[in-house]
Image 1 (spheres, rainbow, N blue to C red):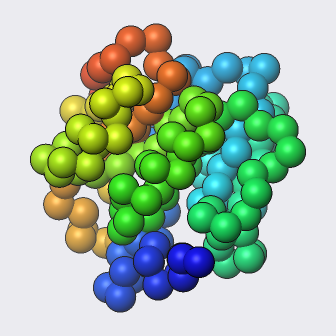
Image 2 (cartoon, one colour):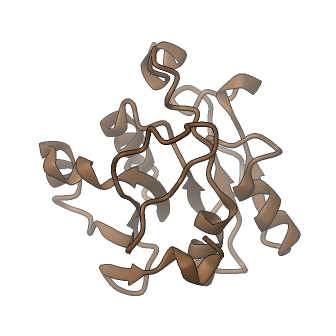
Length: 172
């Protein structure tokens, strides 16, 4: 069994960087309103949970701090897609698990991961889609530590493989 708290959260405590509202707003145009979204790395107070709920988009939030370990729990009984900002530690394991469900997903991830062999191997059989941004996201609770750009890494989620957008269009 995987000790998710040890694997998912780095000792530098930079994995619990919170998603700003504008980052959630940027994915909203690509959500299907008839789908139920599993938010497996989100508390009830997260921007994903708050914004989707306010807009009437069905969702289920879960978080490791509430004993909902993404690697060990069974997913909710009915959901159509995963949407979240996972910890950037253990990226490969997170994407392996997400892909194992065979359902669409959109997960925020550092663009530097594209330099790694893992995405090339994992997405060999499934098309990687990217919602990329001109600006660098400023995650909450991380100060100015973020030195990389971030995109939504998606599978079976976007209308085309690569979409370029500006976060300024969503309130950055």
